[in-house]
Image (cartoon, rainbow, N blue to C red):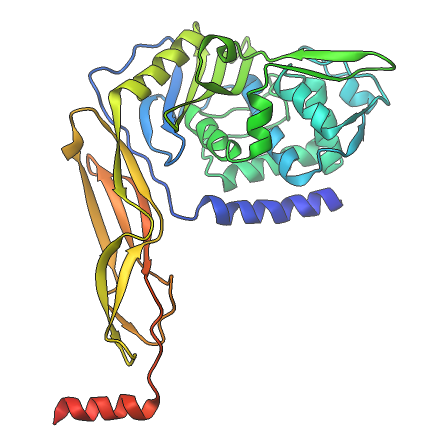
Length: 378
């Protein structure tokens, strides 16, 4: 129960962090858009959530082992990596893709996470679920709650591993959203980019794990994330890659060439878009009036840096929308949110940043406020 309680607290914190500065997306048409075999796909800018390519991205589909992305981030944020997990007979009995766990075998949570994400061990996922939430059923409830909090609108889980089940589905867009959040966790990034890992096995034996994501060997800039394969879902791949410090997330579902499709999407993103810096943190925007303060004005600055991706040769298609409070009443604290800068592409909101006060303005004593008002009317 302590694990469940700490998990709920962690999820509340996640919401506050994830939705600070609302990120909205825009689909951008481009004549160079790649032709892919996947039934559904999306290419997303990992920094802003901006969508660069969309093919049925909101369509509900079986997601196979890409399910494990949520399982892993939940475990990382609610458990401790060095915690020892005793494998139950139920977890050991889960079939198909597995790391061949034995009943009563003991591994650390970290080892189970490598087993789940590299070898795609379904048995490891059940062991993780039971350790974190007491039962697999309780863990699945947390998965669904968590998915909603992260913005998933077309996702529902019935297990922690992705084996075919009724009412178990997600969408390319939702999976990209989950991955975007998960990749902010350093340990998650370390795990999903690992090619090989050795973990303990039963008795004196060891397990040698090889990542199922072949893109880690074939595409230089890849740093994750997860494959998925079932008859119902087809071949699926959630991938992350970064070139010149620009991270992109690709999702392909039910593909006949998941690695080829993914490379096409990533290359499309890296080669056909330019990064446009809209503002930098602390940049001056305007001035707001201040009433009843020692100063009549306060500078308004950008609360954070903001950039967007636009198709090459089409830098003029984006516009900025500024909404700011023009008059404030002292006292005015520094870093007070007083407005929002929003960037639109093709009239679609892409990203935004808070506009804040650049300094504090103290309130004058009441007698000076009255005196100042009298002087105004003389």
